[in-house]
Length: 127
Image (tube, rainbow, N blue to C red; front, top):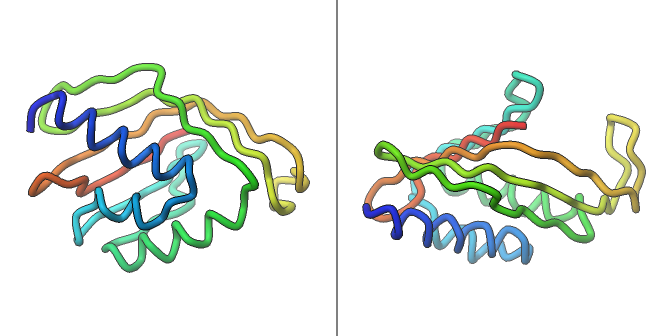
């Protein structure tokens, strides 16, 4: 894949994520997609395969009333690509860390992507 193709695919995925468009997210993903969310050095969510990812993505739409991932840097080096992300989401429900519905969660992090057959085959979100 060219660097531009990588960026376009990542942008389509993030645009769909920001719009709560699970179908749009799924359209960018390889059937054997692997996903990990790493927070504080620990994996706190993972999915293997499109069905597991879809289920997780649908559940996540219920956690926020709004959410926005904004790319602040793009690195296409190597076979994959990574993006630096600013994240902001308004909670729809209380979460275990003590944050309450209506509060805004703000994070910075990095998302690492791998590709296969013109689709995203692996996502690793790190915050």
